[in-house]
Image (cartoon, rainbow, N blue to C red; front, side, top):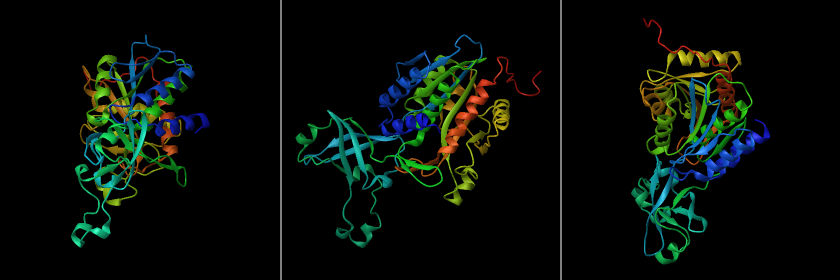
Length: 359
């Protein structure tokens, strides 16, 4: 990736953007688009970042990546000043034991830890359950000495995320909290920037959506208003190269072997064929991934919006999803950008999406 592009990604994942509290990420991406020559940029009522190129064209294409990550909210503060959190999205509770946490407090970030009981003080049976299974069993310690002291720093309902940042691994792989799915929001933003000065045959609507992790909320509301004919969703998917047994569930998906393209009844065969053709011309390898039914991404939201869009899903293989150490290959992300740009730049205004054999 170019330095400016990589800088944007690093800046985005450094920001806390838990579901329902994505605004800092949206502002960052919106400013980047405007500085890149995309003039029609806005944040809608729900918090979605929206941008459009060539809006008068009859064929509407929506590219979407959600900007929220899993996180927490302050649920309860006890008399000693310890806090208990509730989850925002699909938190894997044992993975957060002994992790650091950042709370967006009254006057800025408040740092704390998910404290766990020392194993020395447990009997043999208790040590088998060293990592608690329920957030109600893990105290968050921010150093407060009482409930009143804690309330000087935080409020009930304040959002929080794990304090785990960007770490480069070998062979162009990176570990970071919350790649799911700030990487998708980053990709559609960078795609929009690259296409800003191109002559397009279609109206291109970009959405960095909110609250995907709690029900595809932003994707649904934006797709309803845009009413796209074509929806191109960018999300992460399960890499199965670290645990071979997962291949029987999700297929053989490997980091560094390129983005995946979803195959199944939700995804439009002719649109998939067009995207694959354009990727092939650009010498980009796509990994097919079988999905037998509608899934938990905003491709589903676009598929069902109003009379329904033809949808294609491109995903970045990700190891250790919904943990503080998600791992991906930067080359896979770069290839999604290249694939989207090739498909959209070469998409004809009269692309025939009717099924084969229609009378």
